[in-house]
Image (tube, rainbow, N blue to C red; front, side, top):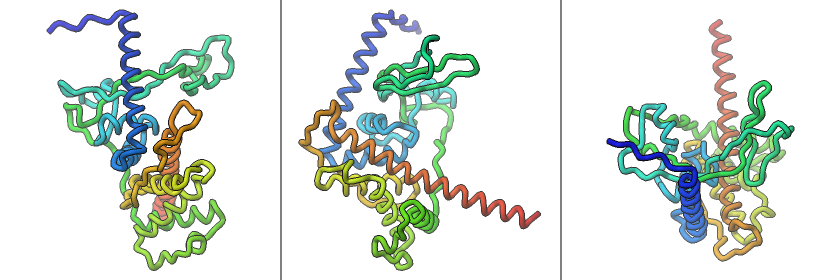
Length: 295
């Protein structure tokens, strides 16, 4: 079968602009859906927990195009693990960085508007900077075929361990006993319910009402951040509550739901990551003590 002719530079620019416009349209539709459709908001929260390696904005993009995505890679990365996009599958478009080498006159790399600092380079090499973003193609595992592949998923933590770690972190971070602060008796609660209460408490302290000033917005963001954290930790979650931001207009280029969803996802992930890190330290300590006993 004859290969497709390579695109000219002009054709590549035109195609790239078309894909960018298409992704911008997807994002605009997603922002509208997140303030009108509770089900889609919940889909974004699930995607945020499952696709923990993707930025919040790309989580929204993926959820809008492939609501049941479980593991997303570029076609090149899929081929590295023996898989490839299935015939007829349509790529998911996400924001991917456009990189360039810093010029010799550029000293310490700066973060360009809309971008971020990338690789620092090796000895004597100029750093790589991100100068912008394009609509890059990726595929979900369900869109590929080839060798057997199982994405690595963190082992769920025992609910009692999650509860104990969250309680200790709450007291250490905020200087309050979580039971006294909230009027709870965790001994009377099932471990998973106590963990849900504590996840909500952590999210409440991390997200301020100044960040979520619309009536009902703060409580909704807190509940959703706790929902994301629970999913990541293997705890049955409480509800993911859609922020009441429909019709709200600001001077920002992006609608208020953009900042809201980013804050919710980053908060939920941070809470879950802190628990997993602490659990790893606990288990390492136990293993070291057991080895010492054997020795």
